[in-house]
Length: 85
Image 1 (cartoon, rainbow, N blue to C red):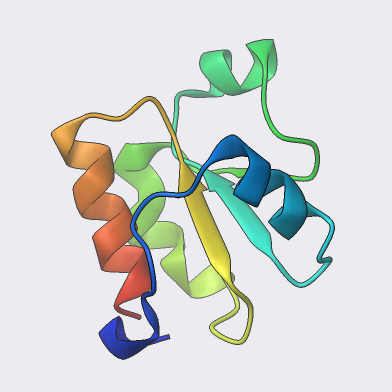
Image 2 (cartoon, rainbow, N blue to C red; image 1 turned 30 degrees about the vertical axis):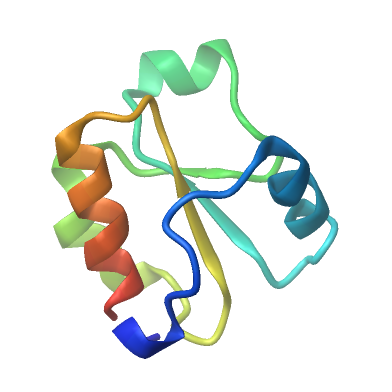
């Protein structure tokens, strides 16, 4: 994926729900394992924000990736980083 492939940095819950129906879409939850355990999108992958850089090679560049979290400036930077791969 390149920055040119980045269409939108934020999507609505309804849009996320539609994308969830597409089995090619990867949902990447960058919250803590504790937050992930409490609630998460079914089928999401949990990679805590401090491990994203080390784990990014595990994600397919051929699939759309939706990064979600409780928005902070750090997580917004992570979604931009993932989108530029």
